[in-house]
Length: 247
Image (cartoon, rainbow, N blue to C red):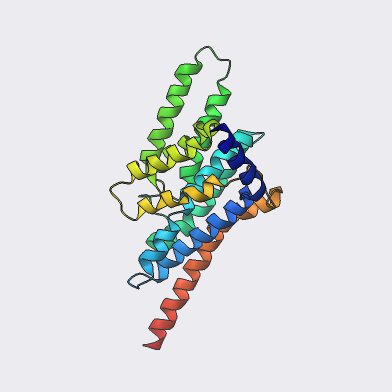
């Protein structure tokens, strides 16, 4: 069994996908999903493309768990996610609800931010006498925020990021466990069950950062989310205007 695992690790290291490759894949899947949601409702491609798009979130959740593990400053990492969460909220609300501000739900950056903020609190309490109590309070506050803010994918999305992170030392078993949790958590949603199909991509992660290993390139990945939402919303307005003008 050990021999098989060694061969698997060797192949994964040599031929696997880097973190950058996974990011680009997740961005493409997300874009596909959002195009279908905004422009292809009622068409024969709608469900297919939305199902394909379900693979994006597990990849992002996995990458954030890796980011937490390798960042030099988790508080700065949390701040960066918080900044883009705020920046992305207006285009998110415009695309999904046609409003500048919608309080019923917030974008996926908040989903990714919550477990990072909780882990930052955990690390801050290291060495404290009341560390256990503070960590319990931080975890409770995190789950409370997941319910109160209503981020995309909800508390289940927050739990999936946490699952990837706290089981990362047991790779690839941790990945299987996180995907099993997805199947359980989203058992009532047929479309969300396709998220577990991200498993093969996560199993071939080679542990390397890849070509998006500079700060500017990393920030460009973050910026893609609000920018593509703004572009999609502008295109939708243009389509509606042209359609109405034609009448």
